[in-house]
Image (spheres, helix red, strand yellow):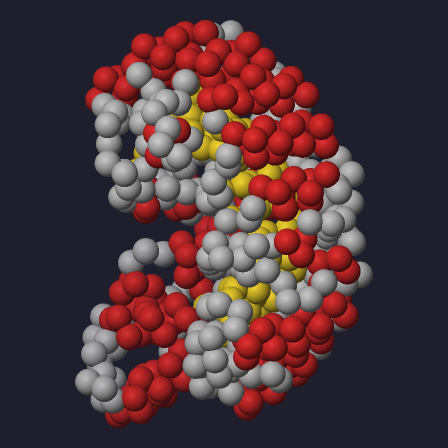
Length: 493
């Protein structure tokens, strides 16, 4: 394998980019492998390196002697653990630059005794390592109240000429905003953090600047009161100019305009990630014929049912979270999904016991279903109910009617299934594709019947028999153990 063509090796290593442990092992095979793997590892070093001190030391080792002397003269004490200049220019491989992570890195490792001049000098020297005519940054994250004019750095225009992604706050001063607007004509993805006040209306020019903006996230911090409402309206009107190219849109509060009705080519829509105060009634008659992914939080089921009804059968991923379903609501959304989404691959949805037979129709009609994330709703918490979820009925429906492609399961619950119910489910899964299984327990209401050691022992037995390929258990008291909704295999990198 060590003699494979370099291009083929690179493609193999790129497939392993999320498995850092394996890549690090491959790194030591020979020089060729090392040279191919380092650019993959250093493409986005901010998310793959957990040891901040180590990362900062490697970065500082790239500084010139002149820069190091300058820092010493300023009284910066960051050089004591720095390495010798490395054989590889790691920073030249970096494509993602998180100035937020960089600020945190410098602040966490070093005590500047409130000396902002020293901090600024250190930051300037390090930023200049990343932004110059010899590097190419494609993803740029700018922190809140950032005060360094990137466009004035020699080589910045060349370095950011291929910029595809920008994340910044709308509370940004004019000098920084002006420079960004000139540098961001090539961006395709824009993420804006919208504050409660001090928003800069000039951000509208930055929105209008790109030629092919197709992916936008609007993260709104605060209720849409008069001033914020007016600001969001300006942003939305600027975004409408990109309607023909818009494919991915996320907004955390309901829009102030009819902006979404303009996005007829939208493929992915994410709604409602900050509060549950919005009614979202403005979306009830929304038509998005090409929509493939719908991800929502705290959006009423009535609105979601309307959106799904007005799609044309391309929906392959639906994620509905953080919204209470009545029995009737739950039945309607399940029915709408299996009537309108024949190509569904992944589904996250709350299921109530009384609608399991309706849910079974979804299993029968959605034959491409590959992964299920089921939120178990116990009636005991609502409306004076006294009925615990019927796990047996759910497991029987899954055994009886799961499509052949379905083998990925997540179950989110307050009360775990009894051992005998789980055993019956796994026993009857024999002969089907080996499953990827995750259980997620919510302890916020206390635990009446939780996952016990006997559950783990039982699942280990079925792993040995090949019925369960991989199992993970998480709880919401330790959110670091959880991972993406439709990510079933969790690598310990």
